[in-house]
Image (tube, rainbow, N blue to C red; front, side):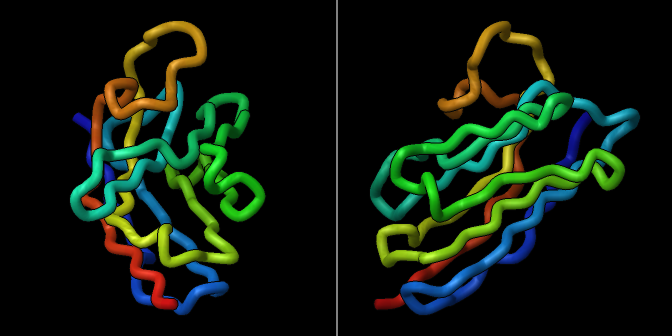
Length: 127
């Protein structure tokens, strides 16, 4: 069983920055990908960013590329999402997710690619 606990959300003005953290717990935690997805009110959950747990390769949605940075600290079983140049349209609940099943290939940019989820953290960007 894997537990994911997010932190770091909050209210920020447009143009500001926030860093989200996601700590994973569980016996001998490992994953194929760790991801951040978000869900704005009234919209479907969408992919934001992912990192391959072993190699550290990173992937981003076009809407956040150049503004957000995902990283992981394997020693701490923690994944981060550094968000800069935030826009009001980034307002959403952000979810951390872990892919622990080998689905093969580059499968990380949809919510169905993930097996465990955190509780979510609210990010609100004011204009």
